[in-house]
Length: 260
Image 1: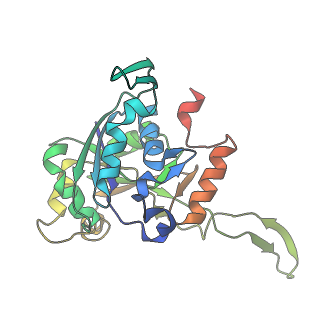
Image 2 (image 1 turned 60 degrees about the horizontal axis):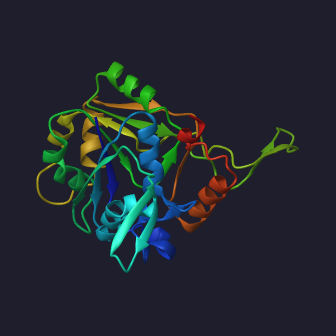
Image 3 (image 1 turned 180 degrees about the vertical axis):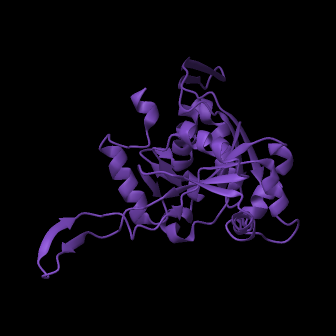
């Protein structure tokens, strides 16, 4: 099953990094967040990717073209004009990169990949969020539902600590970064049937989260898989720094491959 990753946006709220790099190439612990996302899927046995590029797409392409040399031990003999590979560090990935335009909206990016995806079920996610989600359980939930698409619903933690006050206005305890307001949000990590393309109008600019998903919801064909574990998107420099610190502490919940 193919995994489609939306990786073409400008990432304007992370401009400290995205003036130079496309957002999916901003690094967490020395590796692009795109690599982390792909490792999550690879851990569950999904290794065929379609990366939908746009802004600074050449940087994403160069990363994968140079991947073999970048993460292998090599000797370069400049005099003899030879390169000797000593130790291979690679992944079992097949990566197709499609340029879908600089300012294209998410739904139209997906529509541009229709022929490459083909008439089969596929997975889709954003290029800026990591999670300790069980892709196996997500897929099983989708299959049971019989829906056209299933999104992963998450409850992100609050940005600030909270105080718990009783009816007498006495502070009972402090909660550090509790879940937001108990609202569920779209965390990406979709499973979709090819019929999703019936809900994306041809031409123009379509935001996936508007007409297509809202249309599916109205038709009763959009399911939700509730994920109660870790999930975090990298929207701002603060988010990037928090993810980097989690990784540096050696306790990244999404790094399931580290615990194999």
